Length: 240
Image (tube, rainbow, N blue to C red; front, side, top):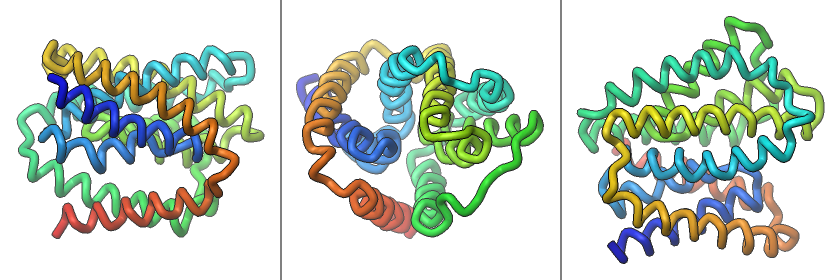
């Protein structure tokens, strides 16, 4: 029990520290490290969904007046359908299979963020919103890393950083709560995970605090590039 608390505290401290400094990366850091310490991709995804729900609900409430609520409906519709199906299908998947899939996802994500971020966009609309949400839902259901497709879509449909931030946090608030409920109903959240969840929550609070203190001293773009390179390396190691 103490081991689970300490592991989750350390991992989510690092993950939230990165998120606080760079504005992105909590799920990616957690999914790269935590499965190899607790032996489960599904538990890692469940922890990340639950902890992300806490932070995104707070941010969505804080910025609720400037969020573009009309944009998230088709995204959520697609994500809810795909998350429901993916969580059910992943229950019996082997660790090795999920590791190969995750490796491919990490490599593709790192290539996008290193070379194509800001250069690609998705035209807004109900159909594209639904399909984008579905892509995010698949990644969310498997690994709780469904953010990149949503980032790509909302960057092209919101005007200004404030509206983008408010809107994506509103999306994450609904999506993480929904994913947590689905995981609970499918038996992926158990009483044995609660000590780890408590440790992860403590680590998240510490990560926010120390990340806020260190933010001005760390060049976030260089820090992010390092994260993406490590993400690509981790993905290649999983594949080969």
